[in-house]
Length: 186
Image: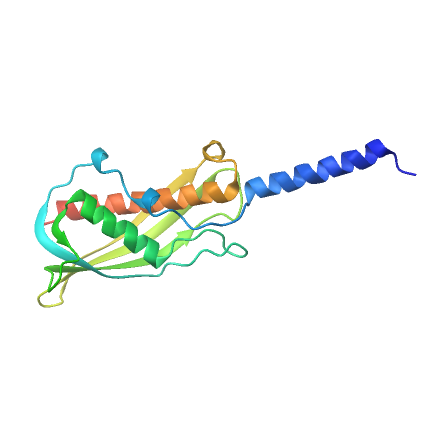
C-alpha cells in the first residue's frame, strides 16, 4: 500500500508541472491595440503637408489559443497604424473624405512567435507601399523588419509575455516606418 506522503508528493509534482506549463504557454489572447502604438513624446518626425488614406492591411492572422497562440491580425495592425499616423501628425490629414494625396497599402509578410518559452521573441516583416492618389503610381515601397523580446521578468504567464512581444514588435515596426517615411520627399 502506497504511503500518504508518496501520494502527496505525486500531487505536488503534478501541480508544479501544470503550473510550469501554464506559465510557459498560458492561454492566447490578442495583443492590445494601445500597446502597439509608439509613444509620441519619444520621437520627433518632420511633417508632410499632404493627406494619406490607409487603403488596405492584409496578411495578418487571428489569434488561435489552441494551435497558433497570440497573433497579429489585420484590423489590430490597421488600428495601431492609423492611431500612430494621427498621433504623430506626420500628414496633414489621415483617412480624409474625398481623394487623398497618397494611399498606403500594408502587407504583413511574416510573423514568427515561439509557442512556449521563458523569453518570448517575436519577429515581424511588413511591406509598406505608398501610392500616388492622383495617378495610382507607386511612389515608395519598403519591407521593414522588427523584433521584440519579452523577458520572463516582464510577465509570469507565457501568453502575457507573448502578447507583450507581439505588441513590441508592432510598435517598433510602425516606429521604423514613421521614421523612414518622414525622411523621404513626398
